[in-house]
Length: 114
Image (cartoon, rainbow, N blue to C red; front, side, top):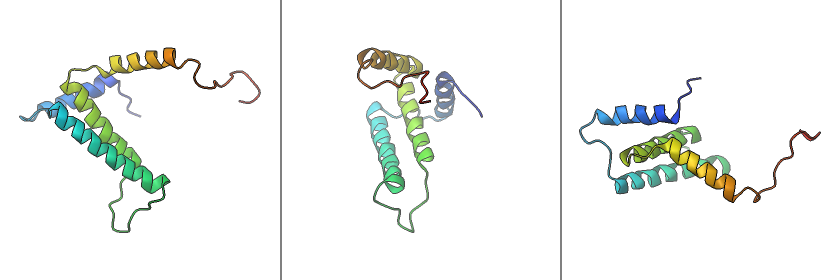
């Protein structure tokens, strides 16, 4: 398996985008692209887990493919705004850990239920 750090992913995407004169889209266009990709992901989830099966003539796509598309656009968005996604992730995990520490029922470790 080819594991990459988030920093490596951001760098790889930047190298890819940097080869084009157009560069990154504007933040508003990037947000629109993200919404578009999220809609495509929602459609696939609905086909696999919802009540709306694919039509026989619809292109076969996977949830994994759509998540990949959404992730790529998210990384482009972060790069275009010079946001380090590792730092952003660390901040949100700290926030959730502190704010929601007693919100959910924790799984007890070391019991016979494992």
